[in-house]
Length: 108
Image (cartoon, rainbow, N blue to C red):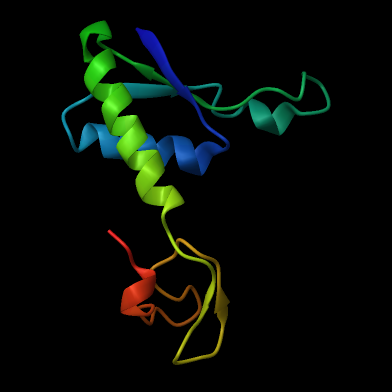
């Protein structure tokens, strides 16, 4: 096993894990639940993605960069045209009523 990425939170770690798995690279998330122990442990504990096969490292690094660039390129917050709810950037549908966001907001 070899370390690939230390995520900001559990969601980012799981999204990258799924992204890699969809492309044939198996990984595991370690330190997943340690953030719940903050106060008892040092505050620099974050979920970390580890590859199961060392030979996947080069391809996984490229895919990680694609993943991070894809998610960094999302536009700013938008207002739902159906219910008026303010939606954070990066979300493609309204969390309140499931209406899809504006087409120009959903960069792929």
